[in-house]
Amino acid sequence: MKTTKKLMVLLLLSCLMADCGCNRNKAVDHYVNALSLHEASLDEDAIQELQEAVKWDHEFSLAHSMMGDLYREKGQYDEAAGAYETACELDPWAFVDHLHLGQVYQILKRFTEAIDVLKRACELQPVSAEANYTLGICYFETKKYAEAARFCKKASELAPDDSKILSSLGDIYRESDDQYKAITAYKQALEVDPSQVDVMIRLGTAYINLKRYGPARLILDKAVAAESDKPEPYIALGYCLLNQKDLKGALDAYRKATEIDPDSYNAYNGMGVSSMMLYLSDRKDKQLVQQALEHWHKSLEVNPEQPKIRKLVDRYTQELYSGGNGSSESP
Image (cartoon, rainbow, N blue to C red; front, side, top):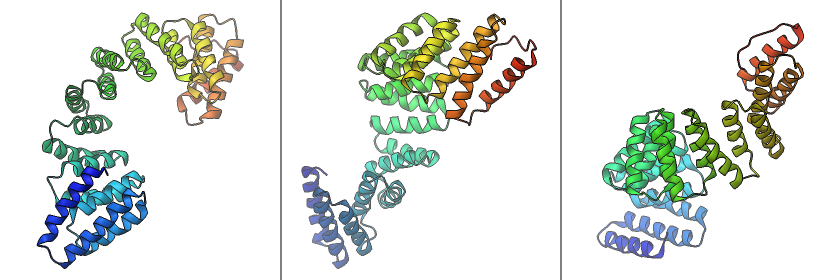
């Protein structure tokens, strides 16, 4: 807690103590002790003081609020939620407590409850970009994309230089299948911060969804150049090349990803699909089937929970050893 805020709280407490009973005075004493302990980074002791404070005065909303803050800082989100819930019940006009409770619910994946609380936070402070953004993300998690876009867009208008909000808005539009708006949002995010490789990849994916492989290739090449030591740009580039039917190029991109991360099952899947599509274009080379199967086997060794890949293995193993022609369709 900043020193100026602490002084303001102490001033408020002195006013409260002026005409309060003994219980409130004892509660305030424990609260002041908690402030000092928190300043000294003794948060466990501070929480104990706050627990004593609310024993003396359960309606002491500031103590519940601070307890929520300390639990949240320690990653004890269930306890933080309980403290914030009480603080909000005691003070329905406390914007910060409603915002923090909604954020804790979000972390706990209690999205429906988060939405209810964050709607109240937005009523209390409509111009809060953080509240509107968090509410939008919770709607996104519940697949209510129209509402998600509404609140995230408002957040982006309130904080136009926040690339996180802009990229999240792109994600919402992409999931709601409005690729053009997604592309615009991702571009805006990159204008704010051009170094975001993850946003480059998401922009590339939006282009691929529209079959605009030229601009997809340009942005994904840029992502690879920016983070050549990470597998994700190569996997995205491989997917683009696969869609362009540049199968050997896709195979090389996926192979590079596995060299960087030998446990990347997505890269092994891509190598398997690339090899199999090469085989399907010319069925004379059975070795390509064996290579595809080997890549998929490696993928399943890393992540066995892939029913679609298991089906591909069963399907093409049967074709390889039965001597039949099998299907001419892509895997």
